Image 1: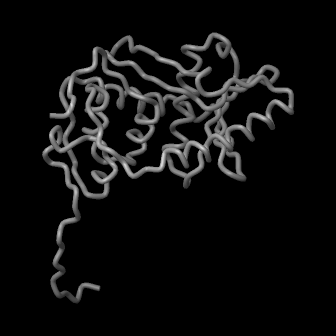
Image 2: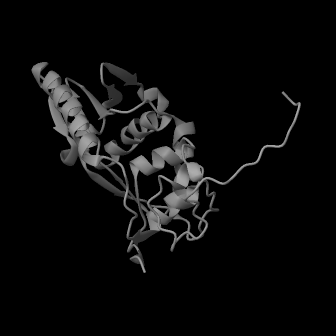
Image 3: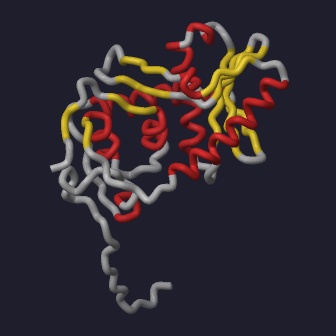
Length: 219
């Protein structure tokens, strides 16, 4: 039996929230389960060493450029945060790649080496929303965002952290903090990347189903 025990306090990472809020993951149950439980994860074919090396190179180059411009830069572990909810029993964890102080402005950035996704933007927006709650240096200052891709840097405006975005964030928090699990939506497309074992999710689909197409003249 794989390890399976409730967390002392439900915890969710900003990266999970970003994917949930952008509907990149149709099975919300998987994120709910990770929020509430510790478990022995399935092994993955993901090459973490290659990803770490690519990410580190991109981050180091960006930090070097910023420091050459005279900016004060904080990176990764220096930016780690944990924020507890007041109205919901849940903690939100995050670790922005870059936090930069330049004159009277602060901006938060994240480096991405893969293809562009909507959750990349939402991840930075969530940092922009949450960092001022925990980092006293950012309070009262204008906080902007940057998405750093190889060869391209995208600006993220503080105006995007509006009431609509905050409402979407609160909805996601309400879903994940609830003691009632959300509905499972198993599919081969998502299950093949999911690290939750079959013992915890009997509905898990590990192989593509056979689809027999009938003859038609529809198109």
